[in-house]
Length: 371
Image 1 (spheres, rainbow, N blue to C red):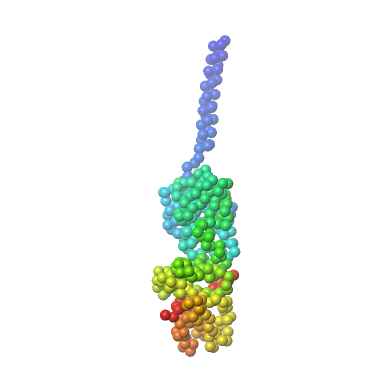
Image 2: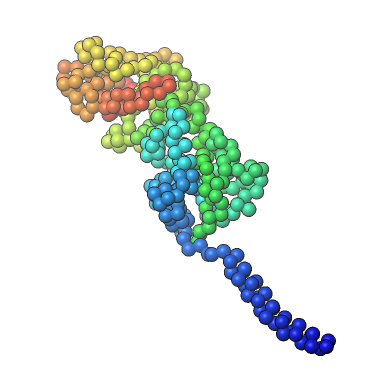
């Protein structure tokens, strides 16, 4: 009897073992993670992350893909074989950024070098899974500044939000990993300089895409000013004193074959100060009867030994428009109202920007100070 029991036990044990193996094998197949088939660029561009294809705005990446597409080297970087980690802001994140008071309403209006720097700040070399992002971890970005992981797993950057949430982690690609984030990550250096200038004339000039050459000149001038204990142009343009800027665009500088390196910081300081009037100069003030006859005079912010010494003369002649609205500016006292000759610039877009501390008029021409 004992032998029979053992016999039947052995018989029943064989299918039981086989069934166990099948169950084990089946479970293993279910748990096995599918290998990624798309690189980072392909992944974030896929239908799964397109709002038009049904993805929620909080998890859609259309805006990110659009902005990255402006920079072929970033696309090449994220579409190559080298592994990277991309912190990907959602459409909602970009929408929120552009709604910030004083911030340009369209990213295409922002200096492209600033945009590229911000996008590069979202890229980290190597694959950093969520498990690798432990409290206190600091990861260096392609922009060179670091992102720090807080104790609760949120991210600390140069943004005013010091606890940015990762809303979806470990989206794996063939060349790395993507983490969706709820906020656009701002490099600390950009954040520190951005907040004080938003909504001011400085913000218009330093962030504006049409003014990138002027912005580079301001940066060089500020280095000179700081070294010589002078007020920086940025402090003037972002300060509380109401003023008016007559701003040449990149087109004007290109036409004059002027780049940031054409002038020294000291020269830029004088040139740009000569484009600033320390009062509110409205379009109406530049088109009244006086402006149309004898002209009007305003002192520029250019000083010598602490005294404003260079006046700007404004003449209005709507019948003699050339490239603008007929408001002509003379910065070296040789304009002839009768012939319309000798002017240095013409206002092209009055009130191109009105800010908390003044206004910006776009001009065609450069208001060089007298030699």
